[in-house]
Length: 365
Ligand code: ADP
Ligand code: GN1
Ligand code: MG
Image 1: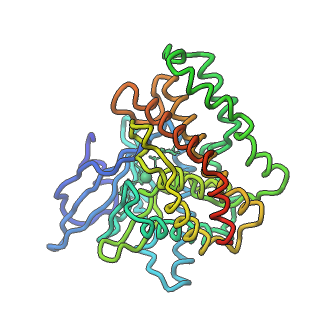
Image 2: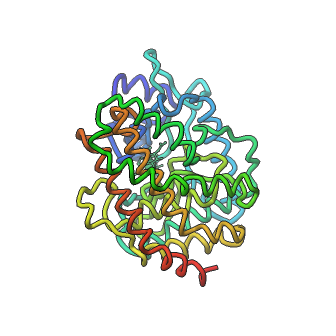
């Protein structure tokens, strides 16, 4: 991180800097924790370098997240919660901007670190996963009357799976920039065989059967902070992709990530399975908060959404592999291919268990 002092100095942060170290495991932005000492009290801030090739309109992005967090603060207060802990608190720069831009055009933002909190990269128990379902369900409920038209769609067609299929996946194969397409013919066929699935939710949306809501769109387990002492889910974070979407995107993406018996990066594909206990626990938590507002078509597609979000994510990893790994951070040459194969193994296992997944949902709602 260049010019760290200069960057930190541009924000309204109090005290003397002790250290600033890399943190987290996200695939897009770079996160750092800056520790300051102020009157003998230690104070931590999260500093993020925003990936502006992914988030091209940073002003619009920051307007979105400030609007959403301001709205959430009022909701949290109305339910006697603690808005300093239960949503992100962004810190403006000294000249009143939502982010700092360096001379070489890099963009950084800052917010308060939620003390005594932690994140999990993998699900450790059904109970923990249920709590994350409660957090994301509550997030959805809080935002149910947010004026959606004021939010810009920061990445258009983000979860429009058929759009990604036609406009990203097929052209990647056609252009074959990396020359890798021949080596993943089986994975390409796996996606092609499921083209009809890619249309299902967007068709239901355009038929008026699924309502457009304000959704998070990146509901990985590590986008929830848990209390260090009680293990209660405190705060939903990583709000960059909050925009109009389907409740099913949020439900499905959580299952994709958290109910996989292996991590997204695991290359032991034969061990990849859907954990049905975790699926049930998450569904119970999510529906306890958001269930009353969901319509029957949403309920009927919960199990399918888990499969679709997994297929979509696998397709995005595969597309990036064929496109020379320009979108997701990777640590080794076949990393995106491994992630894609992992996701497709999960899709295949969900297909085997789809009836059981649907049966699990029925009594919950
Ligand atoms: P990324 O885009 O890299 O996923 P996140 O916003 O999810 O970025 O932050 C990365 C990690 O930093 C999180 O998983 C969490 O561990 C930690 N983190 C982010 N915000 C906070 C916060 N306000 N308080 C404490 N930890 C945080
Ligand atoms: C990215 O930034 P991170 O790691 O929370 C991606 C998600 C994918 C996820 C896969 C803006 O999320 O859509 O589901 O990787 N975020 C963006 O792990 O593309
Ligand atoms: Mg994150």
